Length: 92
Length: 194
Image 1 (cartoon, rainbow over the protein chains, first blue to last red):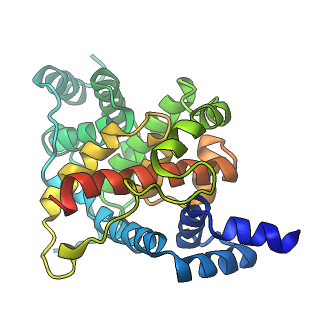
Image 2: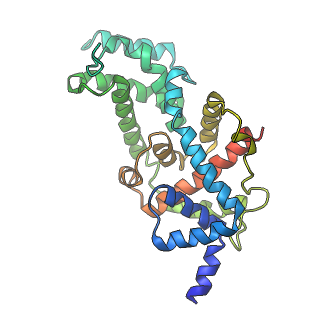
Image 3: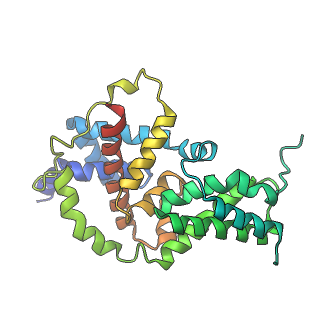
């Protein structure tokens, strides 16, 4: 029964991709690591998923800085004036 | 020039940070009025607390952290993550049917990850990536956004996110998984292969 369950879950890509993300986050158990290892031996799609996930994380590191240097949205002038006024004349 | 001492210049805050904080807030809350209110509250709280600013920190990091806390309070007040367990079970089938064979959990052929060939030699256009990733986050179901963004943009640890948003680790991983599957697919459709 245990072996049957192992084989059944080992070939599940939905579960394997979740395990890849747990691995990425350093939260994978040994048993899960073994399952994932066997799955990835056989599954090219999940190998791609794991690799692409790490590419996305790597590229994502620059997003906050790019929002700072080139903000995609602009706060309305009215809101800006309002805040500026409250900073320039506190307590009024 | 002494780089360690950064002096706050509240008079320049709006000019320097308003659009940045507003854009960041808008990605996280997907609502213009709410984002505007949050930015306003951030500046005013920062101004009131300006004496507690520590040298060695940067003005930008400090303001970003204040905004981040305002946004978490906002999520809490709005109960964005309150019924996350029932949300997950209600939408499980729809998610599965889109990406995985519901009988054996294999990728559906039309959703299975393709090889990203061009990436290896091509110089990644980061500007383009940043625009598309923001578009993909906007398209994501609103229940997934807070947790995904905390992990992906703020790079917070999973334990901290579970605590701040009061969700179980198991729900955390389901949310991260769905968000990543969606983001990967969205990027593939809109960027790497286009």
